[in-house]
Image (cartoon, rainbow, N blue to C red; front, side, top):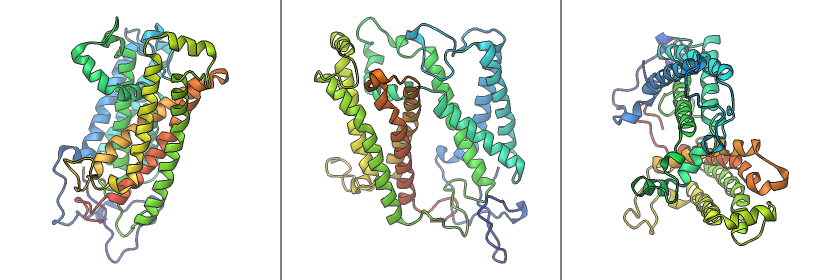
Length: 384
């Protein structure tokens, strides 16, 4: 499966911007002087499609097993201590599992067609792109809940608990149980489908599969000043969307029942470490919003003095893009879960978390603009 950029011969017109592709005989390899990436992750345009097919086949087989009455259906009604907040839970296996099996079977077919580079134009290409993006969005943003966000926030403590055990009567099984683990598997499948679909879309649209640049089409978003201006707006939107959550958790810690009843505040005060955990989450949220400024500030490009072991060195874009992009993605399912659980009488519990959708979207935009502004010449196509 070629990872080349479709070039337009000098005597041909630039391809139209409506997504039409060039005939295969007009494809030429990139200049010989341009080397390809050598690190394993640089091959994502190829292996992401293979892994998406494998994931679809395995999860489809599991779904068929559940549809036929097998044990372990991960969306069935269970005790709330072992449940998740997925949009599919609670549901009956005989109703949902066959749909999941069919969905995954279509994924195997779509993935194989992408591997063979079929549908380079017309309805087939549109159908494959539609399936890929729907699968990616559904598996990554719609079906999961806040579990990944919670695990990310408490990851330092969880690493310690692996060696010391969980304080109190709980153990790691009370934190990482099957219904949550299944949502992580679903989330990984969504990421694979996003990567596979993006690679297929670029490949069939005459773009470089690595950087997305198209020959003879520099695009609108190449001006660093414009990118930084819009990046600042996205950063400020992300920061403002965190304030309601931070303020309510800090208010509860100091005894002000902002957005909750007095009874619920008393219940939290009587529960050991409950208010402290809420305060810690508010502080983590505040620190996260402060770090977001690095996407438009100078210390987000050159290591500042307070990072003494690296100060003055240029920050690799991936150092900021990977963690910021991951946080942006996991925020959105948590916000959508809060929408489903919102109650006006206790708006302080889930209301501020609804803005995680805005936070995630704004952070994602700011991260993407940072990547566009910081990226250099592509080592695959030589553009930049």
